[in-house]
Image 1 (tube, helix red, strand yellow):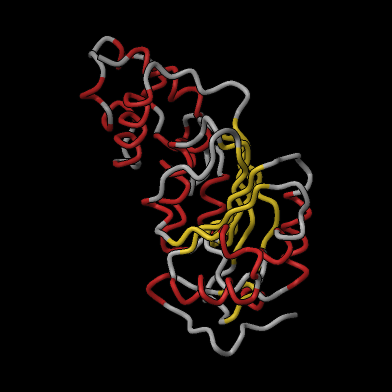
Image 2: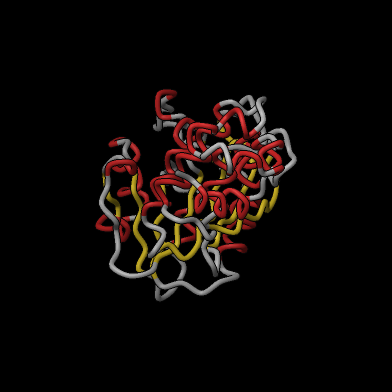
Length: 256
């Protein structure tokens, strides 16, 4: 195991917990290498636990985005060859880092991990894969299927565009300092065929409205979006968590 260098300070406001378990790092890199890629973006390299492995990959255009100036300075000292590849900015505000397809990897800051994925969703035409570390509860929610209590807006909207694989759980002790929650690594790969919705805007509206009142039947939760005639369909007897991604998508064709 490697430990967080003493001169680095943790910033709770940035949700920083640094990965220190080399076996976990190697396992993540193993999953990354299962698919070919030529451009790679690391989000939140922190103390460089994954970065040192990523820099050894040959023939890769590799960049990293880090908001914390102290970590940028540290990484530049630790990996001089990496200095010109670090983008010091807020990932949520940054422009797309590459022209053409690229892969994303990271031990994502837990306080903005869902926002990171929705930003990635906007780049989906060029994102060929995402491998990320999340709070376990969030990872399970993203990967959840219909009928599950934790299946919700995030599950449906991301699964409409990506195949989601829950890869493995990670112990609190793999980090410095240990977070109060377990973590997990998931992989997102673009779906070969997008969910068959009418428009993205209608799809997002329907899903958000349906889960906003998830204890109600669909008939009561989304009645403002459909005519009385359409609402007679027995499908509307179900609650939002019982509908598949495809069923949500197909319903957009029947909206007002």
